[in-house]
Image 1: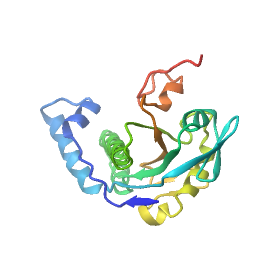
Image 2: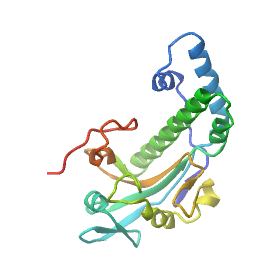
Image 3: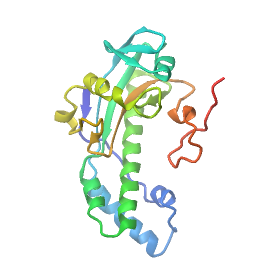
Image 4: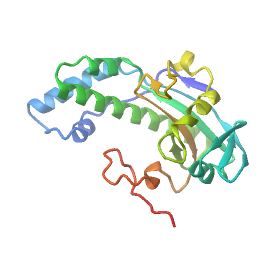
Length: 218
């Protein structure tokens, strides 16, 4: 297992303005830039990952690092992979706290969105590192709870593969399967030349976070 205690994440003000649908100039843009500058002082992007061998595959299960996971999508996508990468990425608690402390609900929303953007960039950095370090042409990811057939109740199994995550990057799992800090993401990265997103198996057509179109099962 390896941890990174400072991932180099750059907050692109133009990308963030586009994400927040702000004007390119004027008071809104200046407000956006001030929030980006604040966020830059508060994010602490960190990650931990492990390289795990894929073991026996059942009808609805796949063994990863000696632990049996249940889920057809997981079994289908990881069953033929020789090695996969369980991971946890976080940007820490400070930006989340700053957002919650805002009296202006719009500023709170903006800071929450900037935190999500920073988290996505940190996760992308980790995927890029793994591709380069392990000589992989492409990676895709699945997260517990992202699909009905890989439920959030599988989260403790994932954390068991990354024992020490709280000590190394400050992330722990509550009894309700929620990660703290909240601006964290966990999952399993796996080799995929074609690319894969859990969104492909999700029927929520108008989801704001959709990254790929839904593909109806054959």
